[in-house]
Length: 255
Image 1: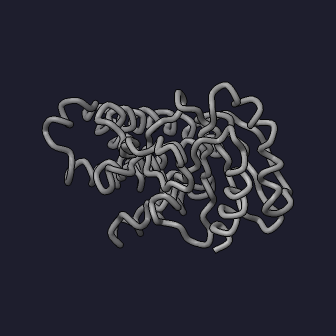
Image 2: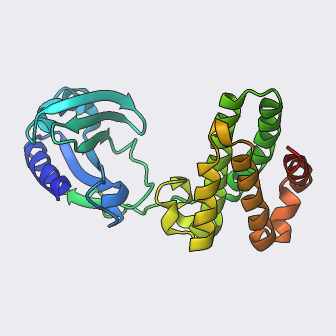
Image 3: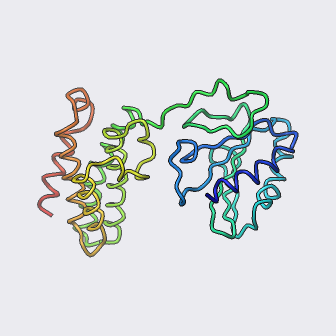
């Protein structure tokens, strides 16, 4: 695959940099979920006192593979270059130090001569119970906002709010069907749901555009109601604002 070619060329160039202590992958390549559409999450662990020196060389190292047609610099988990090569490959180059290295998600080691990553213990991409409660209560409150927008006939805003509902629902579905990866939200969620639930979610999202409202929003609420009845134990029920959700659900059915 083209991703592997890029990794090989770029890592061989970076290995010559005395300031680089380790290189590794995260994302789908590290989780062995790569396909021909995957981007590359490539990490360099560099010496703290040489960080600025290394940052100046990143574009040079990337261009050893192919010409870039797009790049931007952001700071997500550390200094990062979001790059796209002239063959369309999306390659994210992250730079971390020993102090800024976060042990989230699995890694695949490319280069680690000092064995700095021997004690790396990946944290699961699971949302906590507290986060689950936040997503649930957010869904219920967004129902109220949707109702207001829809009754005002502000269908563009109402459609956008339906997207918020689906994003909260995706996290909730992950919590019950794929908890270890629940922070991934929509990404490959379709692989974790049975055919019936998957088709319901797709249909709800199909009907979330302005011309089809309120059908899509109501379908999303119905999916959450079904999930509550199947999976929400008494402990969780006592912690979420279940009364408010059902209050809004009854109002939704009348839209």
